[in-house]
Image (cartoon, rainbow over all chains, first blue to last red; front, top):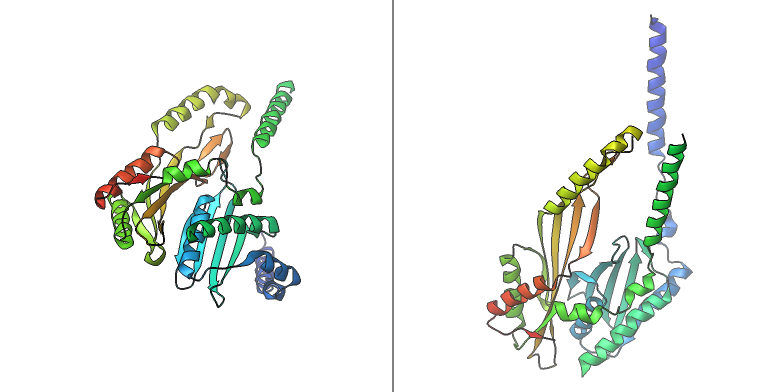
Length: 149
Length: 198
């Protein structure tokens, strides 16, 4: 047999828990400002990710980028010619558990030169190994050379 | 008591063997040409003697539509199309396997380890990414390269008391050369041009 005040105490307890959880919700951490500030590591990464090529036509450069990505087994997901933007992805085979995404931008840099920048992401983490970008640019250089002929 | 330890040991052995099969590839390898790259390229690419890229691209879109795909993205300036279709992924073989496995493992129910219900493929999304590209500066020859891939969703499975929820998904490239041949055969009919192998 339950007494009335015991019931009231239980209700009070429930209210306290609810209030505490609401307060916790209010205190949810916000993303730190460091996530948006350029760090030294990021500046270094940018230098790996960027290379300038002697190409005057942006469309030629963009099409070469697309062809290289396809040769490397990437699926082209999005392209924007006016902005010189390509987004592609591939998954590892035969286990499909790893996904590599890449965004490449092609921007004119005056007097027949194009600046090409690649950002690669492996399973939601940015790839910081310079070797990866060297491989990509080496393939791109080959492709641009063949296209020129 | 003894038998329970034995089962645990066997399970451990099997799971360790499975772990040994999964090799983590290095991301740098993912940006390198593999020995199969030229083979895949040859299968996915055909050359057309035409100077009309827009016509080639629009015929490609029409061919994909004929095959039941919906065009999701198109950028004519770089000759790009992306299309997809959703279909059932059920296959008889998997149903038969599931049935046989359930029958064979039913005695394990005594130890609450059976029957084992294998998850089967339920649904799939087949997608295609297509690029046209000029092969010479005069732009009198174009290549078309298409890549097919798919995402498959699995149904639920169970082993004794533990169960796996449905919805697990897996992605794979489609490497069946016949599918590519069929696509290019249709495309060459649509543009009234011969599709040359590279």
